Amino acid sequence: MSFVEVNDVAVTYDGAPILRKVNLQVAEGAFVTIVGASGCGKSTFLRLLLSQEQPSDGTIRVAGVHLPSSPTPDRGVVFQRYSVFPHLTVTENLILPLEIERAKGLGLTFGKLRRSLKAEVEEMLNSIGLAHARDRYPSQLSGGMQQRLAIAQALLKKPRVLLLDEPFGALDPGIRRDMHDLILALWTNTGMTIFMVTHDIAEAFKLGTRLIVFDKIRHDVADPSSVGATITYDLPLRRRGVVAEGLAGATISAANMLDHSLAEISQDRP
Amino acid sequence: MSYSNQKIGLASRVALGALPFAALVAAYSVGSHIRRADNPADKLLPPLDDMAATFWRMATVPDQRSGDLLLWTDTFQSLARLGAGVLISAAIALLVGVIIGYLPRGRATLAPFVAAVSLIPPITVLPILFIVFGLGETSKVALIVVGTAPVMIRSLAQAVMDIPREQFVKIATLGASTVQCVCRVVLPQIWPKLITAIRLGLVPAWIFLISAEAIASTDGLGYRIFLVRRYLAMDVILPYVAWITLLAYALDRGLQLLSRKLFRWAHLEGESL
Ligand SMILES: Nc1ncnc2c1ncn2[C@@H]1O[C@H](COP(=O)(O)OP(=O)(O)O)[C@@H](O)[C@H]1O
Ligand SMILES: [Mg+2]
Image (cartoon, rainbow over all chains, first blue to last red; front, top):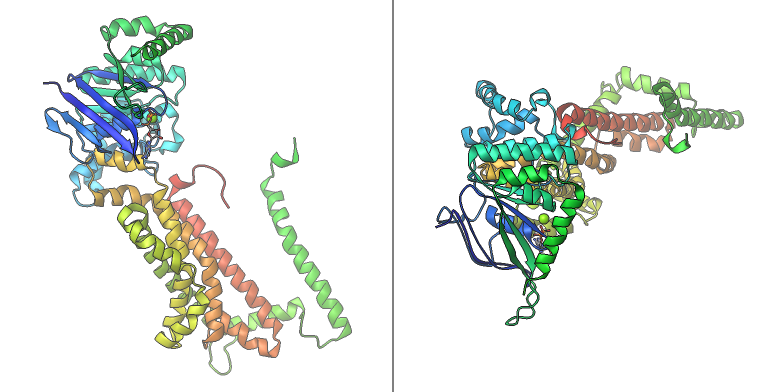
């Protein structure tokens, strides 16, 4: 039995099929990267895994248990934007998960307890290199710093599954490489299972232990009107270290070649 | 450098800002002078020093009949009504705005009603308020509430709806309950919007305050200017209008500063008026 099991999942918005017949078995500790054309339903798929939405059909189980009907702390998330809270400083963002846990009623802490929570996140603050910016608000941080904060905040609840929706899509290439190192280190240290949507095919190859492609199927003989997307390609990647090293120095043209060949592969399906 | 991105220093900004005011005062002085050259008893444009003297008298010399310092009792009464009305509106707006903005079921239930109520011209409700609550303070405060609550509700509901959905999802993944989400995500982010809504509501609030006082009151700034209108006492009316304007300006600026002080995070980007 796999850690994450997706069985015949379909999603329909107002009668329009978005996803259909999605089947996926993922082992614990996998790093699944997800690519596909814009608008084909990648974010929708992540929202299902997060319980932000329910499938119209099919089932999803994690660790053998059906997903609950709303998000829970065992599945963390980082979006491309809006993942951290604009009205809280860096430190306040980091202690928020702890405050929610300790102050069951309103989630507000004061005085001594609050100070002790701040001390608790000190190490995290240092490890993501934001100690010097602890009292800044998110809008005073660079994009990369914001996403480091968002990842750290998500990890404070020690989720078993981490969902990333184009988390580095808005970052500069140099910063993006740093973020790759960070996320790989965190993944290695925690052993969590990661699903990451990206539009950068080189990133998908570099980070993933498994790459899946979502695409629309138009040629279903049984039901010609259906245009929902499904997993059209499922590629186990070689050991991550090897791929990562190979791609670390990859030029843009190499990335484009990969992109191109993948596009061909996805056009070749029956 | 083109004219549209000129940098202006503080001194010249103050000077430029003062220019229209100075021009208005100068134009008034000239007009007043010309009229009184024709007719020394002219009441329409009293000279500035007459107005200053009258204003000073109202501020410092007790009224013969009541023994009150009229300017201050009027100001106090009006601000009390304005404050009560706007604060009640703010409380209603906060509650209803969060229900409409945060809970889909609340929105479905209340949004059409609030939209309909906001279309009632508030002044048409005034006779009803007088009949129901009598001519006392309640109906004046109620008029301000009727006149300001709908816009404030709508602006707060919109503020809640403008919070990105991602934040609600994110805090749920951090283990938060609905109450915790409201306390830690929704409310803190709409406090500055509440202040904005109050500033927005103060504009109609002044209108309804002055109207209510003009129609049924025995004190207050609106009562005074409509009372002395009968004697063409422009030397009272004009300083009172300036005084009301100054109060409105001070309230607005004070609220803006308060927001900047309390909610620094909300004022980090962009210029605002
Ligand atoms: N809440 C919704 N209601 C209706 N349609 C939606 C909704 N969310 C997404 N869609 C549609 O579903 C499709 C897939 O969206 P999405 O999962 O965001 O795509 P991707 O992340 O792959 O770019 C898009 O065509 C989008 O317009
Ligand atoms: Mg998407």
